[in-house]
Every structure is written in structure tokens, then in C-alpha cells.
Image 1 (cartoon, rainbow, N blue to C red):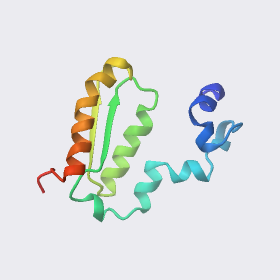
Image 2 (cartoon, rainbow, N blue to C red):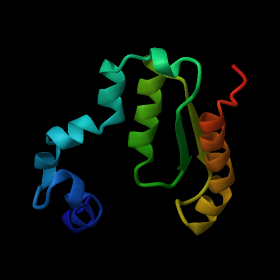
Image 3 (cartoon, rainbow, N blue to C red):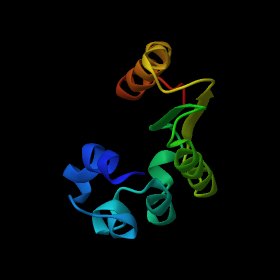
Length: 114
């Protein structure tokens, strides 16, 4: 990712002025789902899929999100993973919002049927 794009999106979380590999600091590691899946206890995630990944096939972060899906699967963490054709644009968000809200509603109301 270009430095300007990184600064706009992530500098507030991971720190400004971090080029290249310097971006991979402790804050980054603690928010990386692949890393988290390797050490988190999967027991609370076995009954209810608390994580919902809904991706656009042309999303620039697709590869990392797909890697997170694989890591969650390997760790035995139940989650929802969906890929939709196209870009992560307004139409994607508009179409994805109902299922995301349904997912959150089911978690809050404990309505996953298990």
C-alpha cells in the first residue's frame, strides 16, 4: 500500500510515518486476525459465528481477508465468510448491509438456533 493511503487509513491506529515493514509493529500484530486465530481460545466461537466477513472480489484487501478466513477455519473458530463479485463500493455496501445487520441481530438476540 502506498504511504499516503496508509497514512489516511491506518496511521491513527498503527502510528504515522511507518514505511514498509515498519508498519508491522505490536499494534498491527495485535489486530491481525491470522495472528489472533493462532492463540485465541476457540471455545467461545464454536457455537455462534461471532465474526462476519463479507468481501468484494475486487477489494484490495481481499487476499488478507481470505487468509484470515483460512486461519479462522484452521483454528476451529466458527465464522461467516462470503464473497460478492465486484468492487467494495456503494452498491456492495448497500447489498451487504441487510445480511450484516441480520448477523449482528442474531448474535444480540441469541437467535442462531443452537
